[in-house]
Every structure is written in structure tokens, then in C-alpha cells.
Length: 278
Image (tube, rainbow, N blue to C red; front, side, top):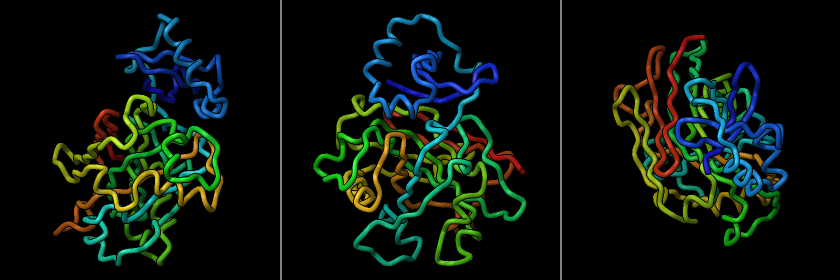
């Protein structure tokens, strides 16, 4: 099942994506996050099967898959190729940072290049949406806490990211990260199945990797993060970007107004965003 958040007729909503239409489910729960908190995905599936009406996808405005997450935890340097190109030493534990909800935009919406920098970089990633509350989750059971998966573009303002050893400013400019178009629920993808992640900038492949290349697997990430904080339904874990980021190319490649960036995750979908100047 594909679940998306969107605006239709100026009203924020969410629903089930079925082919080229979206079936509105906001009468059951006000938001997708609320439906996850109620453990209501089976109810949503049954209700959607009984509804024939829907809104054409080209008639709605996509929002980030979870517009109102309690937490967005991002894992840095989690593909060996990217760690090496970033000239960082191996670590025994995941490198983590946080994003704020306002730093995200939905599928089809422009990523905004701020006037303070010309160094806007792409980072194609796979986002994991949490479906159950949990603390100190054992890695062997971590899959049970996943609601689904979505493409993510962890857009980064590189010079602001490197002002200090802390990355927060460069990762949180408004509307610099793409999240969407939808979440594919866990039951559609086998636990541990190898997924392919690809980033394309103006049609050119810039990043290509598979999830068996992750340094810290998705269950390991969930186990580690849930040790220090309680994971709640609707929380988002952004699992890491592979090598090939623009900052590490010769010469560097920065996203600029008018560009088109695509993040594709096999069995999930393609996130597409243009770049616009603030």
C-alpha cells in the first residue's frame, strides 16, 4: 500500500495512492501520523478498498510523507564510499544529526536555494517511517517497528554544514530536503530485501548504491537510536547517502535554480524536485 500526504483544494489531507489517483482518508484520521499512532493501517486498507472515488495525482500538491514528524533522525557517513570521499575515519557507532520538519518539501515541490550560499548539494537516501512506539528495540525485532519506506533527498548547504564540527545549520535551511512522493508499507517489501538507491541530476546518474552496502543496517540504526530516545509512530530515520555527492566531485557540482533532481528507490518510487531560488 502506498500512503501519501497532500493538499487538495487548499486543504491538507492524506490517503492511499491507487494508480493515478489518491483516495482521501482524512475522515478516518486527520493525518497519516495519527493513523500510524492508532495502528490503523489494516483499517485504512479495508476502507480504501470500498471507495471508488479518488483525486487525480496531477490535481493535488504533495506534502512531505509525514509533514509533522516528532523526530527526523539522519544517519551520516553510512556508505563506505561516501565515508572515504568525505575523508572521515571509520566509527564504531552511527554518526547522527537531526532535521527539522520545516526543512522538508514534498514531491514535485521546489527545493529552495537560499541566498546565503551557492553550495546546495544533493544526498539521495532511503527514509524509514516508524510505525510503533519503542525504546531499546532489539535489532532482531527492529523490522516490526517499521511502517514503511520512502525516497528522501537530504539536501545540504555545504559551507554552512562545515562552519563547525556540528552539521545542524547546513542540514536545516527551510525547504531544502525532499521527502516523498509516498511511503510504501513494510508488507510490500521483504524484511532485509536489497533495495537500489539512485540519484539523478538533470538526467545524469550521480549516485547509485544498494542497501547491502550500508555500514550500519536499518535494524542496527533502529536499535542504536531507540537506545537514547523513544521512537514514536511517524518518526523518520533517514538512513544515509552513498558516494557521489556533488561536494566531492572535481570540480564540485552544486544544484542551482532550474535543475531537476530525482531520487529513485526500487519497489518504492521516484522523488522529483526542481530547484528554485528563494
